[in-house]
Length: 465
Image (cartoon, rainbow, N blue to C red; front, side, top):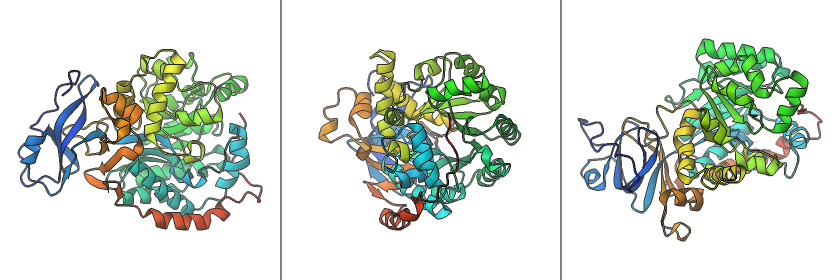
């Protein structure tokens, strides 16, 4: 262990198991957490997996003596908890690069919302398959998604082996059918894919969902024990418009409609104001924010998610990419590095956000943000075996003086060698095992002319903030 590492998680693990382990990963360095949430690294270690759960984190020598159905020699690699994409719209990879160099209003009204009026379940399925392949290759094991035709996304998650929180998005312009469909999906698919899928109610945003529908959603969330996943205070323009039209900020809308009394995941929050912080601090439910900094840079928004202020009031901030239509990728590694760098610039403080803090946001805080903080986000006995192996032998990651800094600022998603969810290997030595990418790309390419047609003059919604 490095001098600043927390205490080991324990070599004994869950003793007394008969028969071989399902998987032993040996010879790696393992990122671990102590009881205070600090990260450290155990050198020359082994991870033993049984029944989809981490059985023990022990020494490589001890791991060598454990009988196992499968073994991975991970010398020169670091085992990390699988990354979590806390807010995305996975099928929007089909729109990657379609709406470039546009202000937010034109991006929505002139391109994205007209194109989305063409969406079919097949388009969504193909987009989700391509997105899952991209995320698996980038070491993402869990993602939180709100979009349309979400039954198709649930089937993709089931087949590809990932973990996800899914919600059927709706606008008030859809009438009562929108909220009803969101609830129906959440109840039907909760616990699907062997428990790897959790669900949420997914009103789009306070500027597209009226107060009455938000209040009804909050009541349904409390009645059925469901979280809420929505956009709010995405940028400062939205906050200013909300103040002018309604007399409160978007966060104020969430408070007065009862959404903050549910377990809520707020996407973006770059428009969160200082006056919003007390509302978030006294929220009755588990409140979290997802930050996707690359998109904010692309849209030229003047601010970013106030991570430090949210940290000070105990609100976890998870890392995200948003959809690839705005971000162009689903690379959480990039989000981690950008979050650290932009926070330093915004705060004018090179000591914030450190590499270790960035890794904490990428693991423990992201797990909390999507409601899985008691089962994923750590490599420790009893936690789900969602982990990735990162190769640090390349010239761009050598030499290693500070392992946390190397992971955040030098390593790239292409350095992920192996991705594991629930103990199942989804990618091994960069080979995808659960998604046929060439077939997806072929069929999606055939469908793109119909999907991207805007000659009909329709759009699913009007952006007016």
